[in-house]
Image (cartoon, rainbow, N blue to C red; front, side):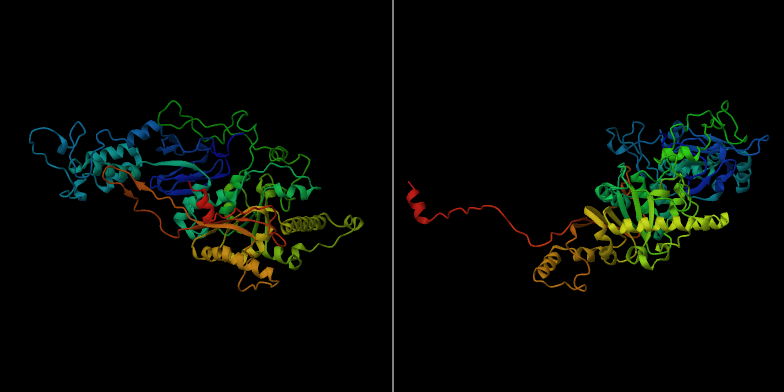
Length: 573
């Protein structure tokens, strides 16, 4: 099976990392034009079939061409631009160097007057550039980026006055401005967190990649390949691989858990990528004989049929998966608990699953179950949970096809809703993962009893105060007081004990943050451009089953005899 993130496929989302280090998200479709902003535009067919994590350069259009071409920049060229052979490891901003690479202060030679080169007297004036802005703009229309940079450096009168460090920064700015390059990155959890954090971090509760990794690790979410028997739900419910999730990050938490469970991406058939080569459209230019041209496209095969897709996803070929309300899977599932009529999982569309127009071949179509708080707590008040009127078969035959289709659609919706609600209310979930703006003390009284014994509880909060309060509610002291009240035959009040402290064991509060550092000789320090915002905290605990009745200790114990002073005196020599 080919990895879903190995090469660029049609009708998928991806990122373009621009020279400014910012990310541009786009959906690539065959026979369309991709607009890369200031870099220009190019046909999407030139990217289809190519691998990720490569750097591409947009070339100028030729006279006989209708669109720009792409050139894959080889790693040797990128490394040659990064490594400066003239710079030495001991060089700093104001320290002169010798040809041997040793600072002059450590040279055991005669007294030689050496002038230290600095930028203190350098005047960065626009008049030092002989080329005007109009001339540079004219060159941008007909000249490649490398030639523009070479002419700008050649016409700069004060370039020799700059230090090596200053010249490197100046050259880097010019490359980012005039070289029309970008890197194609896949749609994965880390990249989408970086993209959303730069624009609207509150949308995902300011969660960072390391915090999300901590949440997923403690949740113990993993692939469960146990096939369940519909008639033996009691024996297989404990090992079915079911996770209960409260997600208010737009579907980011669901996507991270689904990736660990192997249901985030559509299953790819083994035959894909091994068929005869095909191309998209006739606009791709084969310029293998030219170093400035594009690289030949990787073949992409046609899409598989619905029957082949169902076999790849583990569904029998004869079973028909409805687009609107399919029969939910029994194992390896995520039950999403939400307060509205429909959950907010807009981020999942970037991974090929749109809840408004779902793809029946996507694993999330049957492995993601939506459950509202009303359906969980008061299912009889939800109109979707009420069974529609049963119409006899003889009357159905007299109806028109459209009316019959509406009737069976309502029946499928009710069957799916009843299946999800009844299964959730029975409990037996392997884990409970929460990332919500709601007070966790109001969520746990209803959600913790649904966990099986030994199940994991993970709660993420942007601030520490709600979790500190929750740690106190499940502390050892409160648990002891709660048990003492039950031993006296008294019922603990909900004001003093809003939750049952006996249900969770070993609550732990932790946080994690990765800080980027600049590591250079004499200039090692944390990056000053680090993002602020919420720190982000994670609380973990384990579900336990309280013992009914008292605790009795059994066994034979023998106390040691106490040694008397007389015995010690007689035994002494």
